Image (cartoon, rainbow over all chains, first blue to last red; front, side, top):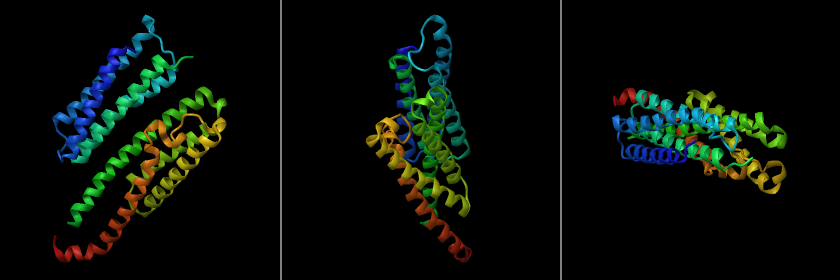
Length: 122
Length: 149
């Protein structure tokens, strides 16, 4: 993992999550902005997949469990598309709340991945 | 007024189901990793971790389902979760050598922002409200056609 990329990713996911959450609670329906914010979170996750594939090859290895790391990463990658499809099928304010919850969950998971990669010794 | 408030309850319920789904995914993934990597360290805690994962999946599916059977499955699963998080939460403090291992229920779900402790309570509240909806919609069905709105 690359720390600055992860920090940016967590910040983006938190911002997107709060934005979708507020939009939903204000009664807005899922729109290009909330779905777009979730899509940005998804693209960052795909970026993290690429980083995680390349990092070990160039000597950036995890201090923790690689299996645990990838379990988190794959789980996180699944969430935004699922919430996005949900928002497309069921167009009401609560779908925006769900998009927000999912983005915040992704932020927590990426943070946890960062701990597994850097902090968790032996 | 009643149609509006009931659709709203269904709406909030969707968020509840989504959170249950995320928790089911998290608990399943985590217990799979624990059992594959270090089952020997705490077999009891990790088996319970897997059980909790299965129950979260059951609760998610049951909340999505309609009708009385799914309602009862959801009720049993959610009560099981509440008992589980209280029991394992207490045991992780009183018997740390057996239970002080990270799982959704350890330390009352502190590793998951106490969501596992709060969620069953919200789930029971929502089920109680929905039961009211089912009963009124059954008995109101006739009145609805008469009223015309």
